[in-house]
Image 1 (cartoon, helix red, strand yellow):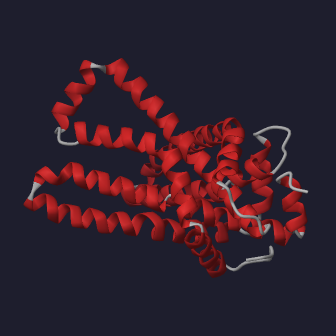
Image 2 (image 1 turned 180 degrees about the vertical axis):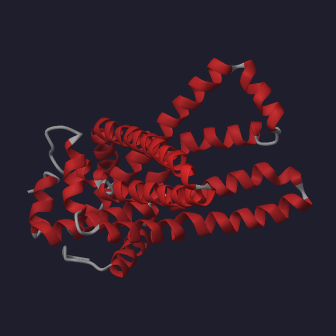
Length: 293
Protein backbone atom coordinates (compact mmCIF):
# COMPACT_ATOMS: atom_id res chain seq x y z
CA UNK A 1 0.00 0.00 0.00
CA UNK A 2 2.69 2.43 -1.07
CA UNK A 3 0.33 4.63 -3.06
CA UNK A 4 -3.18 6.00 -2.80
CA UNK A 5 -5.57 4.54 -5.35
CA UNK A 6 -9.25 3.63 -5.68
CA UNK A 7 -10.12 0.52 -3.67
CA UNK A 8 -12.94 -1.97 -3.90
CA UNK A 9 -14.74 -3.11 -0.75
CA UNK A 10 -12.68 -6.29 -0.54
CA UNK A 11 -9.45 -4.35 -0.99
CA UNK A 12 -10.41 -1.97 1.82
CA UNK A 13 -11.00 -4.91 4.16
CA UNK A 14 -7.79 -6.61 3.06
CA UNK A 15 -5.84 -3.38 3.54
CA UNK A 16 -7.43 -2.89 6.96
CA UNK A 17 -6.26 -6.24 8.29
CA UNK A 18 -2.90 -5.89 6.55
CA UNK A 19 -2.17 -2.59 8.31
CA UNK A 20 -3.62 -3.92 11.57
CA UNK A 21 -1.34 -6.93 11.46
CA UNK A 22 1.75 -4.97 10.36
CA UNK A 23 1.46 -2.44 13.19
CA UNK A 24 -0.29 -4.67 15.72
CA UNK A 25 2.08 -3.89 18.58
CA UNK A 26 1.77 -0.15 18.02
CA UNK A 27 -2.03 -0.35 17.82
CA UNK A 28 -2.11 -2.31 21.07
CA UNK A 29 0.06 0.25 22.85
CA UNK A 30 -2.12 3.08 21.56
CA UNK A 31 -5.32 1.25 22.47
CA UNK A 32 -4.13 0.36 25.97
CA UNK A 33 -2.95 3.89 26.74
CA UNK A 34 -6.11 5.56 25.47
CA UNK A 35 -8.86 3.08 26.32
CA UNK A 36 -7.72 1.38 29.52
CA UNK A 37 -9.28 3.87 31.98
CA UNK A 38 -12.87 3.93 30.65
CA UNK A 39 -12.67 0.18 30.04
CA UNK A 40 -11.56 -0.45 33.63
CA UNK A 41 -14.40 1.73 34.92
CA UNK A 42 -16.99 -0.11 32.81
CA UNK A 43 -15.60 -3.42 34.03
CA UNK A 44 -15.93 -2.22 37.62
CA UNK A 45 -19.57 -1.24 37.16
CA UNK A 46 -20.41 -4.52 35.42
CA UNK A 47 -18.75 -6.57 38.13
CA UNK A 48 -20.11 -4.41 40.95
CA UNK A 49 -23.72 -4.21 39.77
CA UNK A 50 -23.97 -6.93 37.13
CA UNK A 51 -25.18 -9.49 39.62
CA UNK A 52 -28.04 -7.32 40.86
CA UNK A 53 -31.52 -8.10 39.62
CA UNK A 54 -33.94 -5.43 38.35
CA UNK A 55 -35.46 -4.29 41.68
CA UNK A 56 -32.08 -4.35 43.45
CA UNK A 57 -30.41 -2.36 40.68
CA UNK A 58 -33.24 0.17 40.65
CA UNK A 59 -33.05 0.54 44.44
CA UNK A 60 -29.29 1.14 44.28
CA UNK A 61 -29.79 3.74 41.56
CA UNK A 62 -32.61 5.45 43.47
CA UNK A 63 -30.48 5.67 46.61
CA UNK A 64 -27.76 7.63 44.78
CA UNK A 65 -29.66 9.13 41.85
CA UNK A 66 -27.68 12.33 41.29
CA UNK A 67 -24.33 10.65 41.81
CA UNK A 68 -25.25 7.80 39.49
CA UNK A 69 -26.40 10.13 36.71
CA UNK A 70 -23.31 12.34 36.84
CA UNK A 71 -21.02 9.32 37.09
CA UNK A 72 -22.59 7.64 34.05
CA UNK A 73 -22.54 10.87 32.04
CA UNK A 74 -18.90 11.46 32.93
CA UNK A 75 -18.02 7.89 32.02
CA UNK A 76 -19.88 8.26 28.72
CA UNK A 77 -17.94 11.42 27.83
CA UNK A 78 -14.65 9.82 28.88
CA UNK A 79 -15.35 6.69 26.80
CA UNK A 80 -16.31 8.79 23.79
CA UNK A 81 -13.18 10.93 24.07
CA UNK A 82 -10.99 7.82 24.39
CA UNK A 83 -12.61 6.25 21.33
CA UNK A 84 -12.07 9.43 19.31
CA UNK A 85 -8.42 9.70 20.35
CA UNK A 86 -7.95 6.09 19.29
CA UNK A 87 -9.50 6.86 15.89
CA UNK A 88 -7.33 9.97 15.42
CA UNK A 89 -4.21 8.05 16.39
CA UNK A 90 -5.14 5.26 13.99
CA UNK A 91 -5.48 7.79 11.17
CA UNK A 92 -1.98 9.09 11.97
CA UNK A 93 -0.51 5.57 11.91
CA UNK A 94 -2.12 4.74 8.57
CA UNK A 95 -1.07 8.07 7.07
CA UNK A 96 2.54 7.57 8.16
CA UNK A 97 2.44 4.09 6.62
CA UNK A 98 1.32 5.48 3.29
CA UNK A 99 4.07 8.11 3.38
CA UNK A 100 6.75 5.49 4.01
CA UNK A 101 7.44 6.77 7.52
CA UNK A 102 7.73 4.60 10.62
CA UNK A 103 4.59 5.35 12.68
CA UNK A 104 5.31 6.65 16.17
CA UNK A 105 3.14 6.37 19.26
CA UNK A 106 3.90 9.95 20.31
CA UNK A 107 2.73 11.51 17.05
CA UNK A 108 -0.46 9.44 17.15
CA UNK A 109 -1.24 10.61 20.69
CA UNK A 110 -0.42 14.24 19.88
CA UNK A 111 -2.74 14.26 16.88
CA UNK A 112 -5.56 12.76 18.94
CA UNK A 113 -5.12 15.32 21.71
CA UNK A 114 -4.97 18.20 19.22
CA UNK A 115 -8.25 17.20 17.53
CA UNK A 116 -10.25 15.98 20.52
CA UNK A 117 -12.43 19.10 20.99
CA UNK A 118 -13.73 19.36 17.39
CA UNK A 119 -14.17 15.57 17.33
CA UNK A 120 -16.32 15.70 20.47
CA UNK A 121 -18.37 18.56 19.02
CA UNK A 122 -19.05 16.56 15.87
CA UNK A 123 -19.92 13.34 17.71
CA UNK A 124 -22.39 14.93 20.14
CA UNK A 125 -23.91 16.95 17.27
CA UNK A 126 -24.46 13.70 15.38
CA UNK A 127 -26.10 12.14 18.44
CA UNK A 128 -28.42 15.14 18.75
CA UNK A 129 -29.22 15.00 15.03
CA UNK A 130 -30.10 11.31 15.14
CA UNK A 131 -32.22 11.86 18.25
CA UNK A 132 -34.19 14.65 16.55
CA UNK A 133 -34.67 12.61 13.36
CA UNK A 134 -35.72 9.55 15.37
CA UNK A 135 -38.25 11.46 17.49
CA UNK A 136 -39.65 13.45 14.56
CA UNK A 137 -39.84 10.33 12.40
CA UNK A 138 -41.51 8.38 15.19
CA UNK A 139 -44.16 11.08 15.59
CA UNK A 140 -44.84 11.06 11.83
CA UNK A 141 -45.16 7.27 11.80
CA UNK A 142 -47.50 7.37 14.79
CA UNK A 143 -49.72 9.98 13.11
CA UNK A 144 -49.83 7.89 9.92
CA UNK A 145 -50.89 4.83 11.90
CA UNK A 146 -53.61 6.77 13.71
CA UNK A 147 -54.96 8.12 10.43
CA UNK A 148 -54.75 4.71 8.79
CA UNK A 149 -56.87 3.18 11.57
CA UNK A 150 -59.84 4.88 9.96
CA UNK A 151 -59.47 2.35 7.12
CA UNK A 152 -59.13 -0.64 9.41
CA UNK A 153 -56.56 -2.40 11.59
CA UNK A 154 -54.86 -4.16 8.69
CA UNK A 155 -54.18 -0.89 6.88
CA UNK A 156 -52.89 0.68 10.12
CA UNK A 157 -50.47 -2.21 10.63
CA UNK A 158 -49.31 -1.93 7.01
CA UNK A 159 -48.70 1.80 7.35
CA UNK A 160 -46.89 1.21 10.62
CA UNK A 161 -44.53 -1.31 9.03
CA UNK A 162 -43.89 0.93 6.02
CA UNK A 163 -43.28 3.93 8.26
CA UNK A 164 -40.88 2.02 10.53
CA UNK A 165 -38.91 0.73 7.55
CA UNK A 166 -38.75 4.23 6.05
CA UNK A 167 -37.53 5.68 9.34
CA UNK A 168 -34.81 3.02 9.66
CA UNK A 169 -33.76 3.67 6.06
CA UNK A 170 -33.54 7.42 6.74
CA UNK A 171 -31.38 6.89 9.83
CA UNK A 172 -29.03 4.53 7.96
CA UNK A 173 -28.86 6.90 4.98
CA UNK A 174 -27.92 9.83 7.22
CA UNK A 175 -25.39 7.71 9.14
CA UNK A 176 -23.71 6.69 5.87
CA UNK A 177 -23.69 10.28 4.64
CA UNK A 178 -21.86 11.38 7.78
CA UNK A 179 -19.76 8.22 7.98
CA UNK A 180 -16.36 9.86 7.40
CA UNK A 181 -16.69 12.95 9.60
CA UNK A 182 -13.90 11.72 11.89
CA UNK A 183 -11.19 11.47 9.17
CA UNK A 184 -12.39 14.80 7.80
CA UNK A 185 -11.93 16.53 11.15
CA UNK A 186 -8.55 14.89 11.75
CA UNK A 187 -6.97 15.41 8.32
CA UNK A 188 -8.58 18.54 6.90
CA UNK A 189 -8.22 22.15 7.95
CA UNK A 190 -11.83 23.30 8.27
CA UNK A 191 -13.11 26.73 9.38
CA UNK A 192 -15.46 25.01 11.82
CA UNK A 193 -16.01 21.50 13.15
CA UNK A 194 -19.57 21.66 11.80
CA UNK A 195 -18.20 21.92 8.26
CA UNK A 196 -17.25 18.25 8.61
CA UNK A 197 -20.91 17.36 8.08
CA UNK A 198 -21.13 19.06 4.69
CA UNK A 199 -17.72 17.72 3.70
CA UNK A 200 -18.56 14.13 4.62
CA UNK A 201 -21.93 14.39 2.87
CA UNK A 202 -20.22 15.55 -0.34
CA UNK A 203 -17.55 12.85 -0.23
CA UNK A 204 -20.02 10.01 0.32
CA UNK A 205 -22.49 11.14 -2.33
CA UNK A 206 -23.17 8.20 -4.70
CA UNK A 207 -21.11 5.96 -2.39
CA UNK A 208 -23.52 5.54 0.55
CA UNK A 209 -23.99 1.85 -0.17
CA UNK A 210 -20.23 1.33 -0.12
CA UNK A 211 -19.98 3.14 3.22
CA UNK A 212 -22.72 0.87 4.57
CA UNK A 213 -21.00 -2.24 3.23
CA UNK A 214 -17.59 -1.39 4.69
CA UNK A 215 -19.05 -0.42 8.06
CA UNK A 216 -21.38 -3.42 8.32
CA UNK A 217 -18.82 -6.06 7.30
CA UNK A 218 -16.10 -4.57 9.51
CA UNK A 219 -18.51 -4.40 12.46
CA UNK A 220 -19.52 -8.02 11.97
CA UNK A 221 -15.90 -9.21 11.79
CA UNK A 222 -14.38 -7.02 14.48
CA UNK A 223 -17.18 -6.80 17.04
CA UNK A 224 -20.36 -8.83 16.56
CA UNK A 225 -18.93 -12.26 15.78
CA UNK A 226 -16.13 -12.17 18.43
CA UNK A 227 -18.54 -10.95 21.11
CA UNK A 228 -21.09 -13.56 20.02
CA UNK A 229 -18.52 -16.32 20.49
CA UNK A 230 -17.42 -14.94 23.86
CA UNK A 231 -21.04 -14.57 24.93
CA UNK A 232 -21.90 -18.14 23.95
CA UNK A 233 -18.88 -19.51 25.80
CA UNK A 234 -19.73 -17.28 28.75
CA UNK A 235 -23.25 -18.70 29.00
CA UNK A 236 -21.88 -22.22 29.15
CA UNK A 237 -19.24 -21.30 31.73
CA UNK A 238 -21.66 -19.33 33.93
CA UNK A 239 -24.11 -22.21 33.88
CA UNK A 240 -21.40 -24.36 35.45
CA UNK A 241 -19.76 -21.73 37.66
CA UNK A 242 -21.49 -18.32 38.18
CA UNK A 243 -18.51 -17.14 40.24
CA UNK A 244 -16.52 -16.74 37.00
CA UNK A 245 -18.63 -13.76 35.82
CA UNK A 246 -15.94 -11.15 36.69
CA UNK A 247 -13.38 -13.13 34.70
CA UNK A 248 -15.67 -13.22 31.65
CA UNK A 249 -16.31 -9.48 31.89
CA UNK A 250 -12.56 -8.84 31.89
CA UNK A 251 -12.02 -11.17 28.92
CA UNK A 252 -14.78 -9.48 26.90
CA UNK A 253 -13.32 -6.04 27.70
CA UNK A 254 -9.79 -7.08 26.72
CA UNK A 255 -11.15 -8.46 23.46
CA UNK A 256 -12.78 -5.10 22.82
CA UNK A 257 -9.45 -3.32 23.35
CA UNK A 258 -7.70 -5.84 21.10
CA UNK A 259 -10.09 -5.29 18.18
CA UNK A 260 -10.84 -1.59 18.71
CA UNK A 261 -8.45 -0.22 16.01
CA UNK A 262 -9.99 -2.30 13.18
CA UNK A 263 -13.05 -0.12 12.50
CA UNK A 264 -11.05 3.16 12.45
CA UNK A 265 -8.60 1.51 10.01
CA UNK A 266 -11.41 0.57 7.64
CA UNK A 267 -13.07 4.00 7.77
CA UNK A 268 -9.74 5.75 7.19
CA UNK A 269 -9.03 3.66 4.08
CA UNK A 270 -12.60 4.33 2.93
CA UNK A 271 -12.03 8.08 3.38
CA UNK A 272 -8.85 7.91 1.28
CA UNK A 273 -10.70 5.91 -1.37
CA UNK A 274 -13.46 8.52 -1.60
CA UNK A 275 -10.98 11.38 -1.91
CA UNK A 276 -8.96 9.57 -4.57
CA UNK A 277 -12.10 8.96 -6.60
CA UNK A 278 -13.45 12.51 -6.28
CA UNK A 279 -10.33 14.68 -6.02
CA UNK A 280 -7.37 12.64 -7.31
CA UNK A 281 -6.02 12.70 -3.75
CA UNK A 282 -2.35 11.64 -3.63
CA UNK A 283 0.57 11.27 -1.23
CA UNK A 284 1.77 14.84 -1.77
CA UNK A 285 -1.60 16.20 -0.69
CA UNK A 286 -1.59 13.86 2.30
CA UNK A 287 1.88 14.96 3.39
CA UNK A 288 0.84 18.62 3.13
CA UNK A 289 -2.23 18.01 5.32
CA UNK A 290 -0.08 16.31 7.94
CA UNK A 291 2.44 19.12 7.88
CA UNK A 292 5.20 16.95 6.42
CA UNK A 293 7.47 18.53 3.81
